[in-house]
Each structure stands twice: as structure tokens, then as C-alpha cells.
Length: 77
Image 1: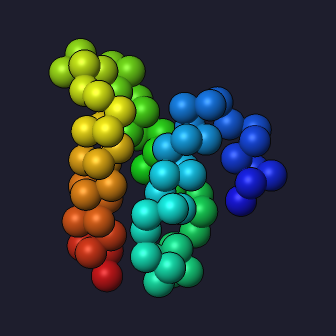
Image 2: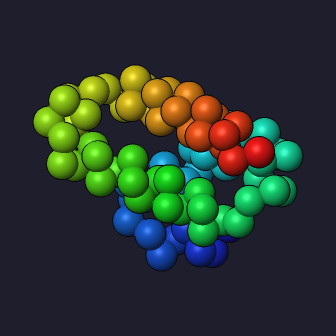
């Protein structure tokens, strides 16, 4: 993962590292890294395009990003 993440922007790298640090191992084992990269890209696109999202602190942004992702992954199962 680290070699691939180094090619990302610092923001994308941070978002993907956040996911890998906080998701259960079973989720990481069950889904492709590309899916998590898509989640990170979507979250960062929202942060860039939505003023309300850009105004959030990093702590709130990443905390809500993670909680939302957990619900989405549960729906995939």
C-alpha cells in the first residue's frame, strides 16, 4: 500500500491511510484497494466542491468520512 500511496497527492494519501488505519481487517481483506481509493477520492471531491464540507475541521471531516464509509460497507455485505 505504501508504495502506491506515495504517488497520490498528500490529501489523498492521508485519506487512504486514514481508511487503512481505521477499517476492520475483515473489510480490508474483503474489498479491493481500488474501492477504498474511490471512497477517498469521493470524500476529497466533496471537501473541495462543497463549501460546508470544506469548512469542517479535519477531525470532523475524517470522523464523518469513516462513519459514513462503515454504513456503506455494511450495505455491500
